[in-house]
Image 1 (cartoon, rainbow, N blue to C red):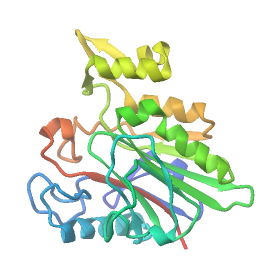
Image 2 (cartoon, rainbow, N blue to C red):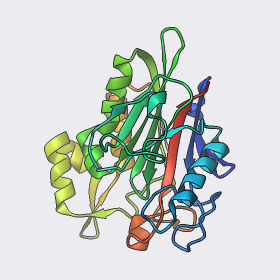
Image 3 (cartoon, rainbow, N blue to C red):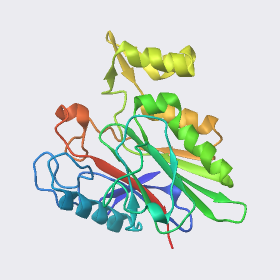
Image 4 (cartoon, one colour):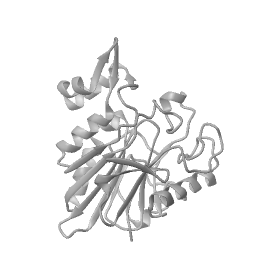
Length: 263
């Protein structure tokens, strides 16, 4: 179950000892521009760099996360990086070696941060046989979702020794609002099969509507995740609380979703 407190959403399934996480909204930041106010975690949206970095620091503070962060320009891929404490500051204080759409780590003291404004943020928490924590974070737009980025993160965590994995899909655009074109339906069918596409890309009133949260939930369960929580909040339905690309025509900030292992 998702609960909203101190400007962040948290999921019960990720409440694992030694792990902190949080999904931001538009609340709790220092941005003052009308389209980014007040919690914007994305660069190149109108805020100066120092404002964005302060917002990311505040998000970590609100969620109880480590303030050493790694993030990246996102490219709607299924590419996931393993990162360590040495990567802290990439995407904020220094350049990244290459862009991607997800991270995993088994090291404490670093927050994995992905940014969204309608796409689905997926956070993962796992433990090894000895109880050591592992975490992952992915940005799942429709292309990354169809390519199986969330399942890819599960596979990486398994290779790192995870014997139990929980996942939470944060607020994103839902099929009540997510009208799409035939390209999306065709791509999903090509990558995941026609039955999957028919289940999650639905025709209504002569138009197609996609359910990326539902897609990610099924793919996570298929990958063997032990528990999946899905936030029912639609970002386009509530642009006052959420940054939504669709609701604003692209004139917006971004939310952040972060997870990390505590020292």
